[in-house]
Image (cartoon, rainbow over all chains, first blue to last red; front, side, top):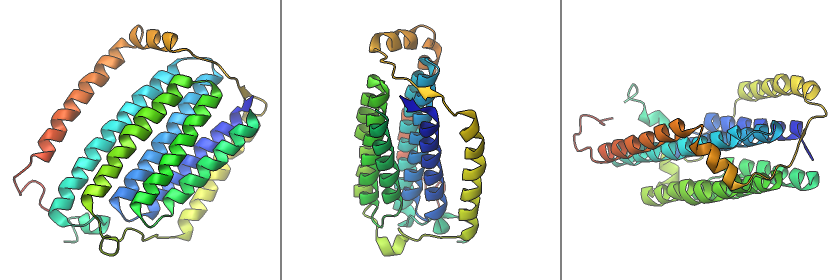
Length: 100
Length: 166
């Protein structure tokens, strides 16, 4: 028997780690890895809550969330490849068009 | 069972921290790979065998391998692109501490003594639920995937320089 509190603390810790990875890094690929960490933590939360309430709905939401993760990764990586062809950089501060 | 859960959760947090503080993007992806695998073992431990295997097949086998292919294609330079430039600010850490304290303060009193039980959910019931009450969502997700394919083909075929000029 696993306590529900431990599962939720693990999920929140993973969420905070992903959020800090987004804020700390200056590079686009690392920011996408942080987004993946956040999606992983939220899928863990869905599965744990579905197990706690004896429902199947959380597992179906997990399948939807993993589909959304695949969609997000494919679109963002295509955009990264297109931008890298133009600018030859992955730094976010050079991406912004205001500085130029 | 709970001892195995504690070990696996500790390994998950450890490998996620390793993946964040890493100079090379490829090593960071590999550490995140191990973290996803330990999360899938937690799913196996809780009794969701289908979900754990989906986590291994789709997440670790498709999405992260896509990331690895892009990292191999890009051939990024570490110094020029500032791959590792951590901006440690004390304000952010104070914000994180406040978030932890206020987020976990209520949970420690609300959730004391509630346990997650091990339910072995077989694939038959999940598939039946997926295609009887939730058939509309599955249709919408399939339409979404089709539209994403069209969008990716459009983005990758852009030749006009005015659209993506930075």
